[in-house]
Image (cartoon, rainbow, N blue to C red; front, side, top):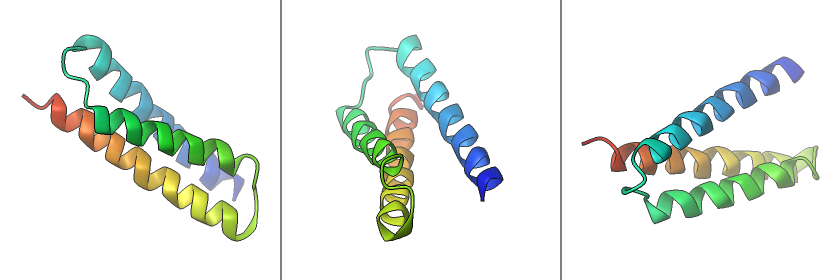
Length: 81
């Protein structure tokens, strides 16, 4: 459990760092939907730290993955050219 969660967070924060590097290197292309999705994803992540067990945790953690994945996709797609 704890090892899987640690690996999950390591990869998640790596993606956050890469997305921020993209945004810093080319701030002229900032996808608003990506930023909004990242904000909602982070809110879900922070909520996981409040509700750490049961169904609320599973739902919030799943939403964190979905919203953060879309945020990474939006930022990456905006910088693909």
